[in-house]
Amino acid sequence: YKVQVVLILAGLRGAVSLALVESVPIYNGVTGVGSKNKPLLKAMTSSAIIFTIFVLGGGSYYILQWLDISNDDMLIKSSNKGKDKPGYLYPPLVCGGDTTGEDAVGMG
Image 1 (tube, rainbow, N blue to C red):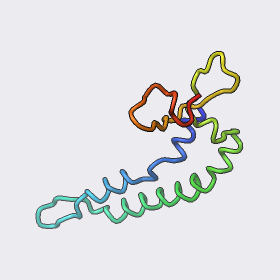
Image 2 (cartoon, rainbow, N blue to C red):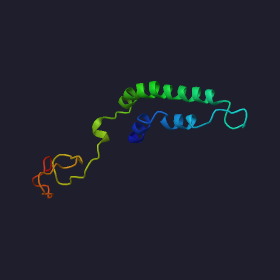
Image 3 (cartoon, rainbow, N blue to C red):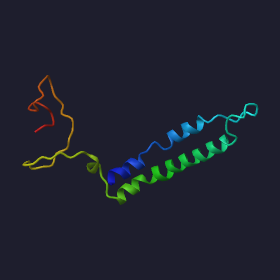
Image 4 (tube, helix red, strand yellow):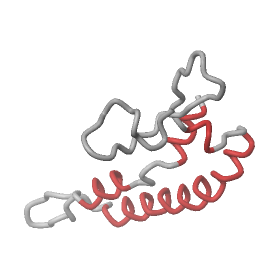
């Protein structure tokens, strides 16, 4: 569940909701199309975005510390059975066309 908490804290912060509110047309008195409440919708959406930026974004460091989440928890761990130290799945840097991993930097 720790990765899900990080994904929630690193969200888009309302980009989709702001785009949706901007797509609402302003009320046209002649045709009757649109919303009279567009300024109110924009204000409420902007307030929610600012709240999540400063509260969730500003508090994310302390929340991650409280959940004891470090950089190593976010890496995809490989199963190195029979090896002494745990490894992580980094993409190998291969020089030339050799893909066996013998000449790759960081492998082995």
